[in-house]
Amino acid sequence: MKDIKKMTYRELKQEVIANRCEMTTATIERKRELIRRNHELMVEMDARWNAAEHKRRR
Image (tube, rainbow, N blue to C red; front, side, top):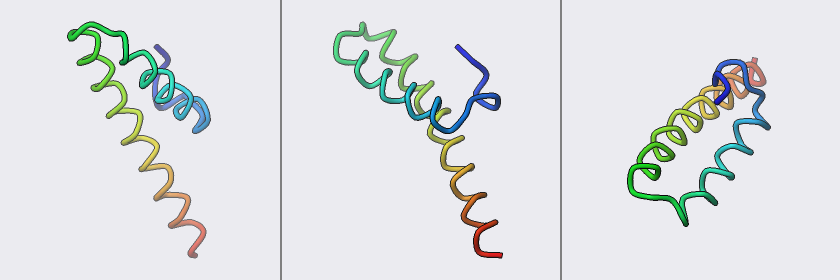
């Protein structure tokens, strides 16, 4: 897995989608890992979105 801070927004989004697809067939332990990873990815995406909105408003 790539470092979240070094990924582009598009890469973050693609990994979230891939993880959601994988969850349908994953074991319980793997689902926990995917949920944790997706949370981290979405928090980073939200932070970037908010930063861009803040810059746009100035």
